[in-house]
Length: 287
Ligand SMILES: Cc1cc2nc3c(=O)[nH]c(=O)nc-3n(C[C@H](O)[C@H](O)[C@H](O)COP(=O)(O)OP(=O)(O)OC[C@H]3O[C@@H](n4cnc5c(N)ncnc54)[C@H](O)[C@@H]3O)c2cc1C
Image (cartoon, rainbow, N blue to C red; front, side, top):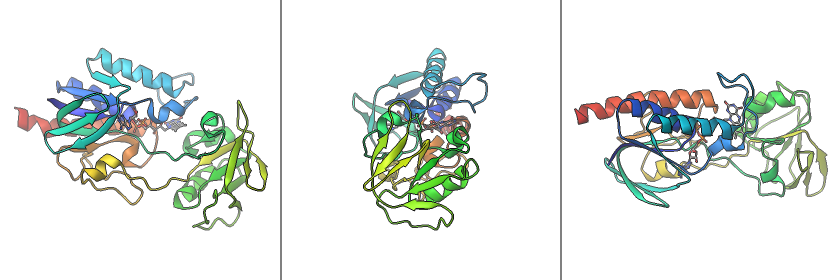
């Protein structure tokens, strides 16, 4: 039986696990892959690194740090189901675990465009994050995929960097007003470019672009949270209180999956705060 099982080996999960380990709790991290940061080729806004580094480098360093401090990390293992309440039964593709507390640090479900070129061009002009990458494309030709409130939020960020923004609703009706911007409603059929994004093809046209931002999030609640009866917001982010606790006793959440600023700094802070709260939650019961 583990004191805490952390689902997710990104900045939130690893940050939490490091603190939990130092509180002498029995902790395990299960992470299926490199998460959001696996797609990032260029991080230069996180504290402490003089030179830019890739997301993979940052994650690998975090995993190594946690392991050095004694955290058990099962990387490449996928959590499939979490049942019960204290103790939680966590089923993965490799094993089954019991834990008094579960911390969800699964990151955000990011949308994908099911078109040719999308996978290869991520991090090469295709981005999910205006705050992270908008500055790289100042005064460039920016495409923004989306049709609703989420797209509008991203537009609000991107317009600080370029006036040349075209919105692609990808076949969806536009649900919000965007007066000053060109809006293309035809379905996107292909992203162009090999090493870098060069543009995109819709069903009737071709557009030259330097960057394409995706803000076409479809509501996908965290499967675990919903199935366990935890509340989610209308944006399908897991609802937590100031202690990062959900409404389900013993179930906590931290990082991108709880919404807010989708950045490494916030995820690290969430993980640290959640670990303090979890320690307080568990200690009266174990002492
Ligand atoms: C392309 C790109 C570039 C970015 N650039 C920057 C940047 O420059 N600066 C910045 O501050 N932020 C950047 N971000 C945002 C940053 O990556 C996130 O805010 C941060 O990684 C969130 O951390 P997290 O721990 O909450 O989630 P994530 O880093 O997404 O980690 C989620 C973890 O959960 C695991 N997981 C999910 N589901 C399961 C499951 N079922 N079973 C097991 N494990 C599971 C994943 O494998 C992963 O380990 C960028 C994001 C993207 C996509």
